[in-house]
Structure formats: C-alpha cells, structure tokens
Image (cartoon, one colour):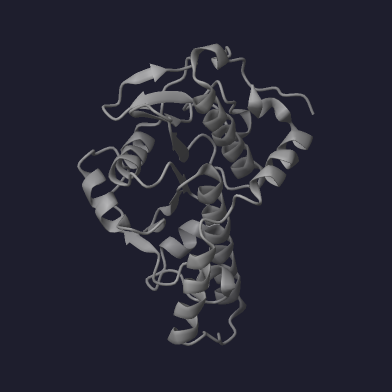
Length: 254
C-alpha cells in the first residue's frame, strides 16, 4: 500500500544521525499505535528525547498516527519553543505531560500516553489494575496513579505528574488513560503493549460476571521481581515490529 500521508519536506539533512535514528523509531511507534487500534484521531501523544540536545520530539497535531513520518515530528525544547517542524503545531496538553516526564526522569528517553477504550475503562475503576494474569503481574506494586485534573494545559500539573510517577515506568491517569516511559523507544512500546493487554483482559474478565481468582501477594511480588530481572524488555521484539511496518507501509521512514 503506497504512503498517502501529507507531504512533509525531509529533515534528514538538518539533523544528526543519532536524532534521525530516534525519529525513525518514534515514527514507527506512532504507526504501531495506529496498527493496533490504540489511537484517538489526532489526540494522545508519544515523545522521545533528542540525543545530545535539551529538546524532545512530539507528534505534529493534525496528522493521524498512521500518517506520521520521521520528518514530520516536531522538535521542541522544555520552554515550549519549537525548534524544527514541518508546518504543524504540537498538542499543548502533550507538551505538558511529556515535558514533565522527560525533564523529571533523566533515566528515560521516551514516553507514551493513550486513550484506549480498555485503558480508560480501567482508569475509571476504583481498584485500578487487578493482578489477573502474568501480563498484569509485571506491574504489581510498580504502577503509579495520577488523579484527573482536567485537560492537561496547566503547566503546574507537571510537578504532580512527575511526583506521582515516582520511580515507576507506568502510570494510570485516572479517568483519562495510560502512560508508560522507558529507557528506549522499544521498552516504552513494550510496556504500553502489555499494560494495554492487561487492561483489555480486566475488562473482559469483569464483563464475564464470573467469580475471579487472584494470585496471593507473595506470588504477585515474586513474579514482578522476575520481570525486573528481565528489564528492560522490548529490544528483541523491536526489529520484528519494524519489519512488520515495512511490509505494511515503509513511509514512516521518510
């Protein structure tokens, strides 16, 4: 299938090799979110730190996720100054959330936020994410929560966002959606994939109306510690995911 995204002039000759590699991976992340049906028209956002610069990349607000390319990503600094763009603005709520995570957590290089049906459903449940299966146990005692404050346009919310995230790499934004962050684009995607899957499972289980069996606390924590030893996860899957995208439409690399 040919790429039919709006034409955005290539910035390949305007950025470093390291930045271009991040741009390609981040564009791939957007395409994967669209592929798996986690997008929300032009809302929600994924960011990545620009190597060697005090800046990060964010999606152009106005393009759908299956239209985003490496060149169309917007480079912005932490004072909300656009440094390089393809003619589209950024989502200001996205700036608030991602500038908070990337400035407050120097150990992570990428962050993702979604409004999926299952993610929003669990975000509205008082008990939050339940330890229903191995996918959810990965996040046991390693998942943060942030109460809803309205559309994230108030920059004062950044302090509370990063405070609630703490040292974790995944957070449920109550009555809102999901957020993950990682040491790489691949780890952030992997965390989001399994957090989303855990939420889908929970909605399915609760909708069945059957009595649920939950593992005991000792088993939950033991399993989470096993996942800690494997971390960061996602690196092994990432090349295959890029191959998948190349088969569907390699236009994200432009």
